[in-house]
Amino acid sequence: MFPIRDRRPANAFYQELKTLSENVQEATILFVAVAQDLEGITLRMTNDGEPPKEKVTPWGGLADLHRMITEAGGRMEIQSQPAFVLTVTLSVCERGTEQEVPV
Image 1 (tube, rainbow, N blue to C red):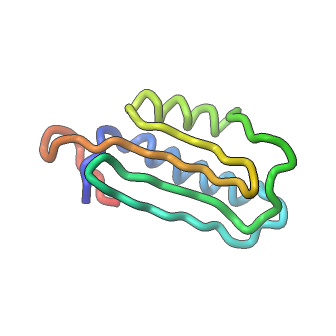
Image 2 (image 1 turned 90 degrees about the vertical axis):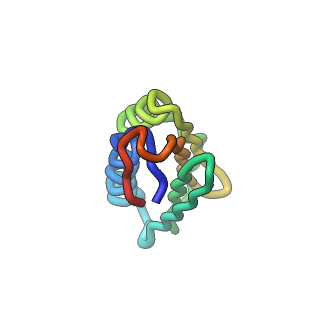
Image 3 (image 1 turned 30 degrees about the vertical axis):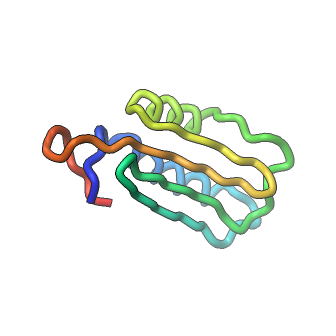
């Protein structure tokens, strides 16, 4: 377990996963990978649906998620091709100085 600065971005990421998985046509499987190191926690999501026909730009829930991640000191990347991949990296903090969130 690594402590992260703010649990709201992680919660928003999981909510966006749910929304995206419900709205992607032809997708039957949602893939989520979580990796952690001394610098942060990285969450990566993709699915087995058709890739976007155009570059994905954040709007709605993705725009809100991007704002929240950035405000928490993290970063968010969207890959459109060859498949849609949403990657969020959240910074960790010194143990005991901020809220700890189990991953």
